[in-house]
Image (cartoon, rainbow, N blue to C red):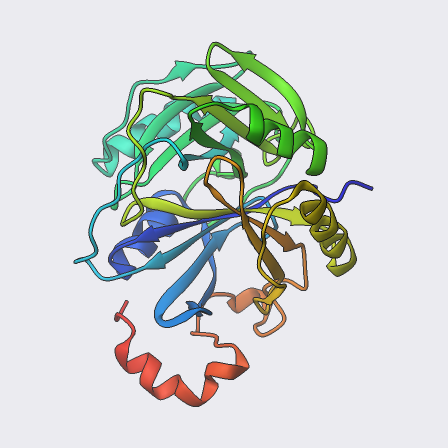
Amino acid sequence: MPLITGLHHVTAITGDAQENIDFYTGVLGLRLVKKTVNFDYSDVYHFYFGDEFGTPGTIMTTFPYRKGLVNGRHGKGMLNTTAFSISMDGLDYWLNRLDQFNIPYKQPQQRFSGEAFIYLEDFDGLGLELVFNDKDDRKGYYNGFIPKDYAIKGIHHVEIWLDAYERTAALLTTQMDHKLIAESSDRFRFGTDDQPGKYVDLVCTPNALKGLAGRGTVHHVAFATPDAQSQLEMIDKLNKFGLKHTEVKDRKYFTSVYFKEPGGVLFEIATSGPGFDIDEELASLGEDVMLPEQFEEKREHLIDVLPKN
């Protein structure tokens, strides 16, 4: 069994909480599966968007700070684009939908064989793509207003800009169960399998400016590992590779280990469980603010200081 099975989630730094929810649920049609707080800084929300269950590989998460947060800058040394997977026959529907919501986008382009994509940004300037393909057998989330056949199925890939790709590629291929899937000019696609939700695209951008953290940028990308035992085995591999990492952190819905890959992007290894229904019924995921036990005594204060949405 591989220790890394694909992507788990992407976490971004964003602005207004209500605009954040409006975009990912209202425009993109994802489900808000968890409304909690940043476990390391409890005065900030942590939203999780995904499919019906919050399945690893479908999850986009955000730290929505207030509107005054300084904008970041896309650039090398950062994960600049998170791509979502949609059936190929959904292209015209999504072009019309983005027009309907007045969302600016770049015209559709082709990348690898059988893959068309549209680049856009959310209300905070976060780089996103809609990737249209026929390789994804995931169902996605049916929210009642986007046709089932055109719903987002989950994350397709993430795109990392680097001075050079070799050291990051070595980490992915020798320690994290990835293999080279495809390449084109300065883009190298790696994956744990040749399926959406399991891809990492490394793009060589030596002439780009260095990225700067802030509103509209990705904080980290998480890779899925089956359980606590496989996570410990991954820690052993990181140690042998000479990478410094955090201790195992309990995030209630999974456990996490964080480290920076050679190009400077923050990586996380997250367990696939226990999942988002351990403190809410599946039918009502995301309806209430759920707090870890250590913050329950601060609930009244947190509800008071957290942005109203």
